[in-house]
Amino acid sequence: LREAGVRYSEVGWNGFGLFLAAPTIVAHAAPETKSRLLRPLFTGEEIWCQLFSEPGAGSDLASLATRAVRDGDEWIVNGQKVWTSGGQIADMGMLIARTNPEALKHQGITWFACDMHQPGVDIRPLREMTGRALFNEVFLSDARVPDDATIGGLNNGWAVANTTLRVERASLGSGGGGGMGTAIPGSIAKHLTRRAGEFVGTGSNATAASVGMGTVSRFTALARANGRIGDPVIRQGLAELHTLAQLNLWNVARAKAGGSRTGVEGNLAKLLMTHSLRRSREIGNQIAGAEAMLWDAPSGTTVQELTVYSPAPAIYGGTDQIQRNIVSERGLGLPKEPGDVNKVPFNQLPR
Image 1 (cartoon, one colour):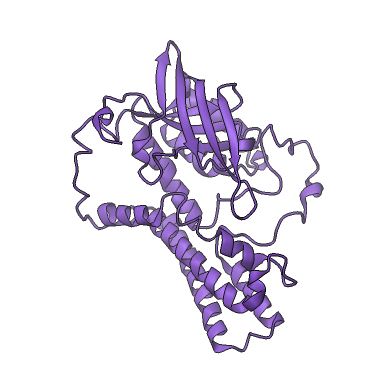
Image 2 (cartoon, rainbow, N blue to C red):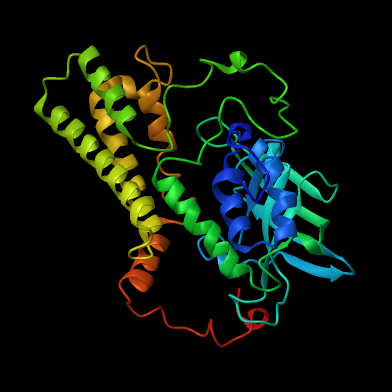
């Protein structure tokens, strides 16, 4: 906050900007870049999105093919990104693009701060099976990024992106940073000029993106309401959810208090979150019974939305399989998968 010249009282909710962009910028950006980008991020004048995944580069993010070609003091960007949460309301994007295709796969990538309002950025919402459209695909056609919007240095984007990914997984594992609030920052939503009272009580009391003590309380109330609180299987399920929620709280608190002990705390938190979410889906359906099949059930739609949403967290932010790979290689020191990835330039690899 000191580097951005922002008082704590001025800080507003900013989703991915606050949880992902800010730590990355603080860790890797030049001082003048920090002062330019951080203040509108912290105050909520600008909201950010993440331009990482591509149709051919999801779990294997280093396979990204979006190109950035230097043109004087700017970079011309062409490519496609997908699963961009909040892209339709974003002012700025965390963009990683390939700036040297002749380098090795994990090299020749650069992290940029990209203006989302320019003509070369086409955002198309993707409707999910929940009925919402939180994700988007983004087409970049001769979009331009100034050279001074490079974060962490030219062709060093993989190291910078790993900072973003680490804080993302830790944030998702703790239940933060994954959803959109009722009052949205940035210039597109135009909520900053409205009274705070207009948003009080307008949000859902359930969050599908995380499992915490609030979920346990809601499920306990639902079990009491439909007379199933005495069922020993239901009681055991509620106790399990309570235990998982408490373990996650301790895991996150330990990571914050003692720093990184294993180097994979964020990955472990993400894995625990997705496991907890699947178990809450199963236990919630046991409690709701046949009503779980009705979207507009009299008892509410907490279980129903959780059920439909539940496959997503095991995919976004790095699949469970990717998290386990990282834990095994970086945390346990097991050998990496064989291959020529570290020997062959990216433009010679089969895709």
